[in-house]
Length: 141
Image: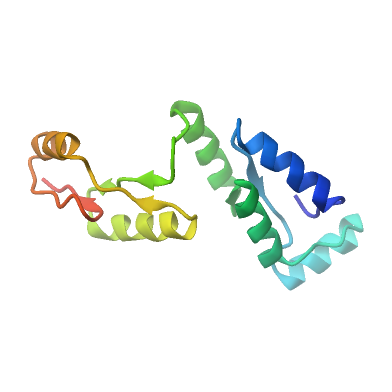
């Protein structure tokens, strides 16, 4: 996506669609130089990336920045049921990825979920480690 012609119509339609199906957006022209290149190539005026990003978040669209992220997200969404809410429990094999995942979750407007006791005990047994259910958990063995 480089630009939006009728922003009001786009955002209204996107809000309705996002209630039923995920919308994934990869937008070109995020930087000033890339915006100029897009304008010279297609004639489209590329809007402020911060404004576009806020609009995407407001309607519930999922934004990606690289083609590889686009394909990874499509694959993940195809294999999982749609989340019922903003909470996510993060379980990882190292602290660094847990921190990175927590940053991504918070920046996307999500919430870090506490593991309920049943899931917490199961995870402790499965991974044979001491987990802390109030923070991203690292499972090493």
